[in-house]
Image (tube, rainbow, N blue to C red; front, side, top):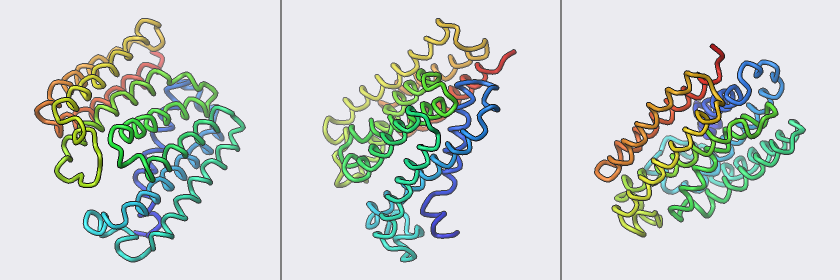
Length: 272
């Protein structure tokens, strides 16, 4: 594969674009077809942002990847760490520049804040355990906010963005519990407060996130098919129990539950 596309993680970038398009549809429904140019600009923003984040990641993890991912451009010698760093900073900067063409304050603010968080995560917060977990979760939620903002409804996805961020914290903690044996040099939450306390905190986030899914039912924000979100809620509740015994199974189940919740939100927007 071309070294730049491998550096950017092309598959991740394309999935990010799909996710943003879905988020825009969730915010305004079928009216999304009236925002073609906005969707193109937002796709460019997301591609550049993900490319920049992954490039910085390869710069920071250059030594680790010699063992973990020797096929990547930096550890394989096809690119120097400094080149990866410069590309990362450049593409993140270009994502901010691209956001200016939305001519929307909310869009620009979301991208600028996300870029600051991404750089902070890679340079400082990744090694700080829980703070890093929360940062990644917030970035996950911000994708949904951006999807709404580019179609003129920044608050249209506020519930799903918050829900996604909360359960993502639980999943990130579960992953840290699972990876305790290989996380040398990192001050992860399980290393600081122990596995049991970390699992309890993960359970809290797996529970509090789904609680928010009830609000659209109360407000009547979505159609009847949205009620399928209850299945995802039950899956998250199951995660809150099994994370104490099997964090690997919990984080994998949480990923599936997040996908099911997204489907419920999408179906809830479709008029029937």
